[in-house]
Length: 85
Length: 140
Image 1 (cartoon, each protein chain N blue to C red):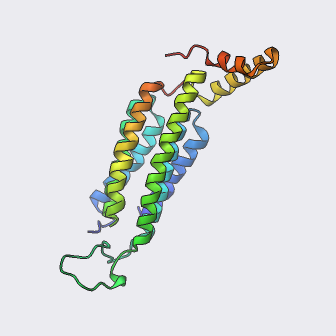
Image 2: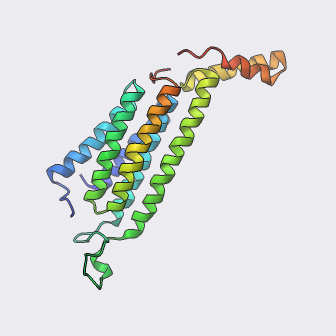
Image 3: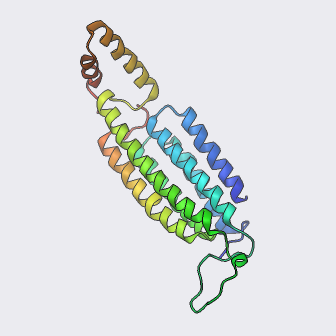
């Protein structure tokens, strides 16, 4: 069940989390940021499953990956898409 | 890279984003990244070498606690995830109100508009006036 920490999948998940997390904070479009945050949450969920926390993994996939992204997209249409004002 | 290094990197990213980015939505996203960092840290605490997922196999009647990972941080982090989405929802609600009232989500613009409407309030002597003035015309 455990991934080996130096393996390709584990390293790929870590890199995905770091890159999408950083880029989501820097892009200028809230919809793009929401999508990237969804990818970030999904990579986090896969990482939790790899660490053996399956319950946390599916909660994070449902709540963090789906619900937070839906909330962000809903907020986009009620405020503005641009993040520089 | 160990899970602890990942947690530290994500926490730094989130905390730095919350402090340095001027846009309130970006601050909120940074806060979410920080919360995921804390969850990664606790999940990493719960793992152990050779530990199994804390679920009994079908037909297994007795369990030795030493064989399993610690399930207590897992349950704590379930609560943390739910709290995090509740925080995000409330914050987005507040941000929508701020946008309708002031027409901006940038901290610097908001501060200057707050200061401007505050001056108007002292001049006209009516707080209601100030909020109506602040509503302005939100740039769509």
